[in-house]
Length: 240
Image (cartoon, rainbow, N blue to C red; front, side, top):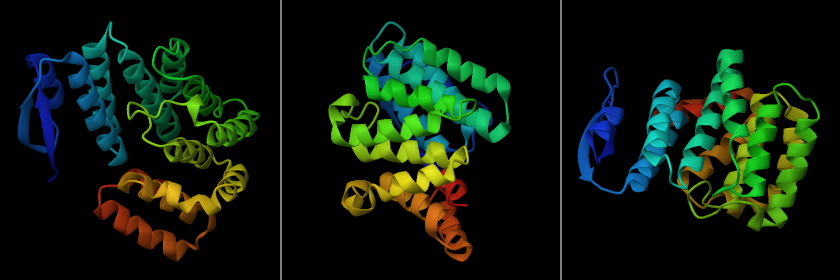
């Protein structure tokens, strides 16, 4: 049973974090009267749920975060992350309705907090489902962002480091089976390994990508067991 930190700022937030059917055991409850801070912690909880393969929970938490952040700049972050999650649902579940939901959310983003590179990446990730040329444009954008990190938000609200942006592009190419483009893009960053070791989640993401693109099946299966044991189910899926 997974234990995790939870924040409660209101009955609404409490119900969002403790909906029936969740398997987590909340062990710490913090108080906050700042709705945007509450929304940030809900998004953090949603990212952990996504990483562990609990997409329905991640969607519920991200939706609750958007409701809390309505009218605040942070609403754009919650809306963008909802689009990411619906896009992943569309991919994993072959759900056309989920893709349409993701595209609709992406159309409403105006760059209130997110920067041009962030918005382009999200829209190109969704375009991979229907537009073959999107894979080349996503690779070009990723290389440009590496040289011009000011094109993306790096204050922790969306990415902590430009390596996170690179990883998200590579994951999108892998999950939509653009493996040749993913290998070519990966090779552009092979000598930048230190940039993908800045925090634990980024290390797991980078290693999953490397193994998926270049490692033999036996090594990938070993990584899968380790990733599942550490709660990185999404990276286990990518590595296979």
